[in-house]
Length: 304
Image (cartoon, rainbow, N blue to C red):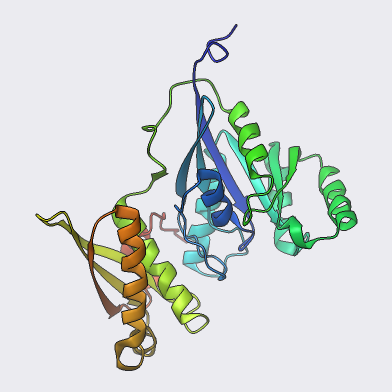
């Protein structure tokens, strides 16, 4: 009997890759059983790699939610795509997530080609199965299986959790033997300052809808724990133009007030203490080419 069979432990990393809006962040939250990644209807919401930690039996699985893989047009796009492929390269297992309602798109085919070039077998999860006729689902699963790229195929709904338990159990068995990498009660490997910034960015996206599709980022400037146990957080929302600043502030400051209220409520729930949140909006032209901003987002600055 091996050490693991006798009660030893397993631990490893699983990178979740896919096209934008395939449901990677929703799946990560479902696998971990708690919200660790922001989820919006917008594409390319995830910018850097976010790690969510799940326990399944004797295995600790560190799921890496990567940015969506797409054809990059700008420096920020290139950094996000590099982060996605870097996460895949560094992991023990790779899970490709495909939105089966959209089918095998051009973006998915580009990812399949890259996987073929890497000559690495990966896991495949077909997501959002609830809205697809069974015959069509089987047809697409067969087409993908015939590529020879996948060791196993799962059919899931990241939103409802259908099939996610089976996927997590399967992945747990694939993790290498070894000690756990994080304390048992830790669910994410992301600094609280960064997670707080992500929460505010999510609320800004949801509030502003399509008015600011991609032009803002949020940074936590200060984090002070008060004597009464509450936390004072000061954040800056960076935009690229004055016109965008006006959109974030809203008429009479209503938009920034709503964003702050929603972000503060979620932070209080996460931190289990009172939060005093102060938001400021600053214009930083062309922040998408600012090396310092990339570092703050946990991305490498692409050159060339």
